[in-house]
Length: 67
Image (cartoon, rainbow, N blue to C red):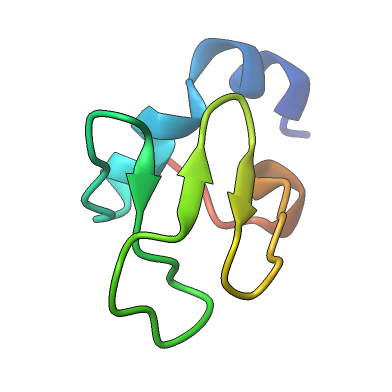
């Protein structure tokens, strides 16, 4: 069984997003992969939040980060 709490503590959200191909800017902003985003609207810090579509997934519970 995968211990997601341990993974979440070891892998910062920004690093997980970069590992999956998101281009994260210096202020933690990226284009949201959940909708057709033309400018950065996804804020990445200790969590996700998209100001464009309202997406706020917990990446480990959704299975997006598997590595």
